[in-house]
Image (cartoon, rainbow, N blue to C red; front, side, top):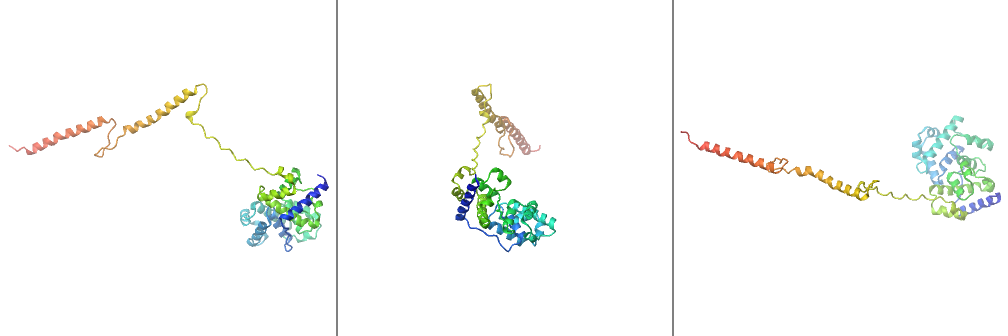
Length: 318
């Protein structure tokens, strides 16, 4: 793509985005460090979610040092409204650690007076910063011309064929600052960021697809594809239906059927041998008739003894 066509394409991006979004200007009452902390919340998030997260941080913690030494879990809980609060909290902790180890304080106001080149290099080397946080700070607090680009924005520009895969990995958009004038940099950056935040939230949203197609109708061939639903796995075959090699299937099925039919009979044998309890509270023994005969014999044996005893009781002494 030539420089002229790239400039025209970015101009079209600006024109379309103005129809769908409203520009958001950075607050002028924030310090350099506050702009940097807000950029940590804003990356890959909407302006509304970032403002809520930043306000929660300022309200919850006493100062920046308390925020630096707190746990990542607590930071994530405070910023729970962000798309990825743990990643944002990790950026904040690392940047605060790096600033404190370098300056032994959290005052960065002297960066406004320094040359922009050395300041940008210092920010890029600072642990925890990203191309987006550096670009936002340069644009909003240091008076430079650098449009912040985060992951969602880069993905949207990739669909529009304005960056290559190599550019996306490096986190740069070649020729962007030349195509967009500095006077329109803040407005264009805010509009483009809102598109990136919506793309991060849902890349398949109809509104996002509509905006991208208005910018470039050919982008329909570069949209991300949904993953196909997994097909249901077939139920495992029963053991009785398994056919072993080397033997006719009919014989195996017949043998399996005989085995299956014989199995309940083996288990049914103990049930047949167990009889219900008798009327006198005992249980019949295995054998059925043999147990009944034994019971009748005992009764018959007891009967003569009873009659004999009665006879002896009635017999008079001589």
